Image (cartoon, rainbow over all chains, first blue to last red; front, side):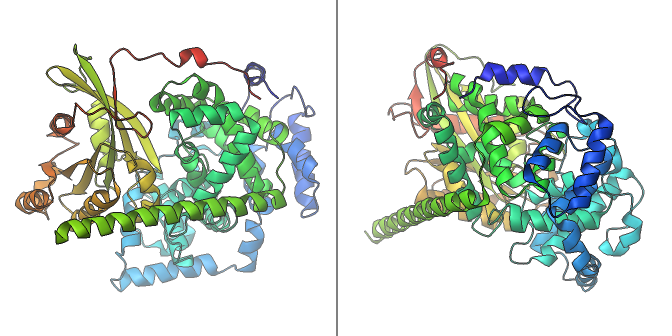
Length: 380
Length: 207
């Protein structure tokens, strides 16, 4: 049970969404910036044995900008993966450069990546919200010059593009069966906006694709269909009235949530809010993504209920998310929506998997019957 | 914008229209040009799909398009049916400077004819006509493919706005305006002045 006006009131009370919040009105302690900094230092030192409630409390306070890269890397497991295979990233880049040199480079994958480099606009205006600002991951590119992108270094922009290119090409080489999929460009760009090393961004990306977004980028993208079913079911339980309204408007969950899942909210939320959400996604387990998605469903409830057609519904949803404060969203995700254990999520996904398979086979049946129909027409 | 006329007197028809085609051929740019009169050299890649609306005034009727602009990368193919389901019209876009995108466009036409709404109006748009010096697909070839397959063809440039409004107006003219279809699912008819019916339902509490 919740009232949207109460949520709105809480949001209005948060004046500093970007960095360490000064106070928490409910469900959390008040942090001074120093105390918060100390808390994250302690949590980092205590890894992997950290109490989840303690992480929640610290997340609601916020992750200090200066600690964010370490927090993301160490809590997510990317740092450990990177340490276990210290030469892999450089090896992959060499492999990419060698195939470029031998003329096999301009594969479909590489041209897709090239197409998208300049079409990956992580809210540049909002970058100032973070103290790491405009670095965009490019500042160390001199140390990993095997990426093969021209001369490099003429401007921040070309360095940032070069870093993005290297991370995406390395990933495509690392996982040929998944390869490069649109959406990864936005995630990688968001990672590069915070992490000094493109190598670290690469490892975070591998982890997101393999563990946080299972099957979302696979050839059938079934994982996305599954998670949309799960979100639909959880959201229906959370607010049946909203589910009815969505049905009446013919607005399905995938129409709302596909971009959330495939871009992890890049250019959906304001940049400062995005960072708060990523703090939670990378410090907590995969269930956190679903809890954030459920919190987003609550955020967009009011415009959805007020909408009289699809356009109003989707437009209203987009606008309200664009104006969402990250601290308030995290409180909703961590405190208000029902907590989802890893086992719960797995069970929901099994059910979602069934639904997604049923959908896929009914589509296939339709395709076959139409194909039969048209070949009969042709025979006549 | 010529296309964005206020509703003329008479009836308003609402149609669902979907854009399909390979990545980076200019689907979003065509829509943005048509809806907002804007063009960006580097248009952010579309993930999933984007939704916009725009109206076209014909002589005695107004056509309101509900436009679904989809992601073009092959990987997103499995998501496409959810956007073209129930669409009354489709614009299949290719890039005249890239032959592969023309082939991909043909596959989309085939899929729409097999799996789409049986009466769907399909337009084939050869975009980037401003880059004629780099042309890889001749208009005659596309034209003959289009007439063989019962669809219509136009070369467009989202960048210079050439033929963009014309494309949407041509589709608006071809859409049937006499057979009412049920609303849910998209391609239906709306009587002018139907707005606001649901606003009253706005703020019911939940659960």
